[in-house]
Image 1 (cartoon, helix red, strand yellow):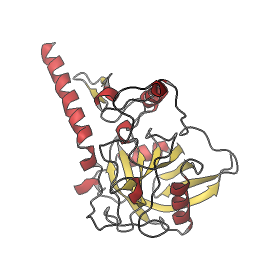
Image 2: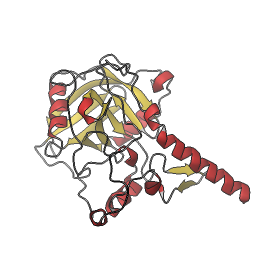
Image 3: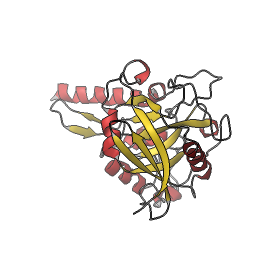
Image 4: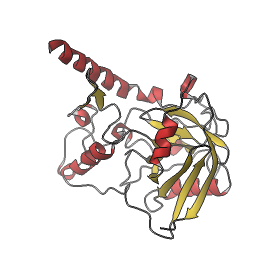
Length: 273
């Protein structure tokens, strides 16, 4: 029993180390002059330090509000896999949605690949160069998408990769892909193959947040340590099975798939209900 506890403690320590270095895992391979983005870094802009009275109140969560008939949604058609359907949030993330919609309507994303895939974490695409160093916004160069209120990094969230915060968004985006009831780096498997959760995970990453957000992360999974650092602008509402299938491909250097995963088209259409 003692050895098992020691092993579990070691796994937790390794897990927390992974959080610190997750930026290295999820950073696009760009130089300082590239228009490419980095996917989420380890630092988060979430409230930390002493808990305030406001943190005890439930916060608004927009991610899982379903689309209504007639509103614009994004449909990513992935070759040999199927369609990923995304609800967009223009009221919360106007610049981010405008950029994505504008690029999609220009056919900018058609035939591009998901160039970086990390199982149980994310899939990243939207770079014309296909190496994480390229891409630009609808307006040319980078743009500031801000940190939209009410949108979080639950599994299925869609956000922009950036190089130095949300003022450096371009065309690259990622889809969070942690399994349900799995918080990235917030759980581990014991020697018997059973999943174990780190109960004080949020405290250990310095993320004080309302209880309803914590419960939603525990229910849906996600990457809470990325909140506050990236512009979330959409949420997959249909096709997470496609995202999870893509996440299982074999990868090589820089987490690039050995077999290309191609976005045939990215279309903006009216939701038919």
